[in-house]
Length: 309
Image (cartoon, rainbow, N blue to C red):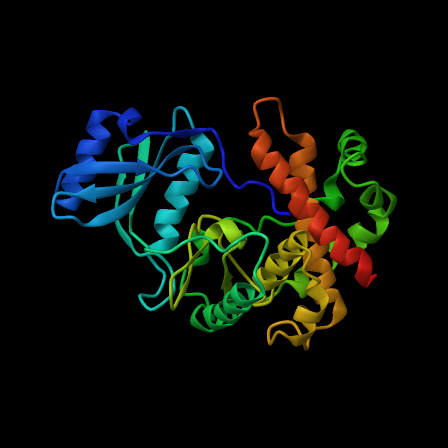
């Protein structure tokens, strides 16, 4: 089962400095009359649905560089990425942004939807897989300039220190016993990941919103440019936490069914390598909920990879 995708490090709308909320209201041209803080997700800072005087609802994210530097940096990158996404892409539209050097805020259109049910319901998973296929067509070639993107959050086996290996062993004995195999797969990354498609880079159920007739992909700070199949492979690996066997789905999906085995195996190895490296080296101030999620997702990838090798 996918762990609970939420953090206790959110702040409320009322905790945001008055100058920042006033700046957001000026951008929107209307005062905020109500705010519903949203607990889901892992980034520190504010995540709230707010209602304006005319009844319009929008979604607001904000973080302080002083107290949550990583979240603020991700918000700045997301502003740059979403500003270049096509209008017809199934993503939440960025309506406005604010950056005063400390506080960074993003205002999105409100999506009247919900997260996919967990464990996955097969009909919803099929909807999402179809939507990912359509999304790759919209985002190939990438409409976003590469200079605003970060590197793919993949890999780590080639750079593991001995101390990290010791800390990974309790999390995945199989991975430590097969470090050479995992490193060899990672060495194949330049060819296996090559492509011109904009990848979301964090495509898990907690970054999807389902309405009655559409699937929206939200939260884009980790986007990168590469092979079109990468997002669907990581999504399928996470579905294994719901008891779904990803192999038959990969064999049928149009983005993966014709691939050489290495092209999937490399993504799985590098996905797990990144997550386990970060989880194993996380310090005492790391969000325990995020670390738990990383370990679970890594194990999902390794379970599928182990069955393929």
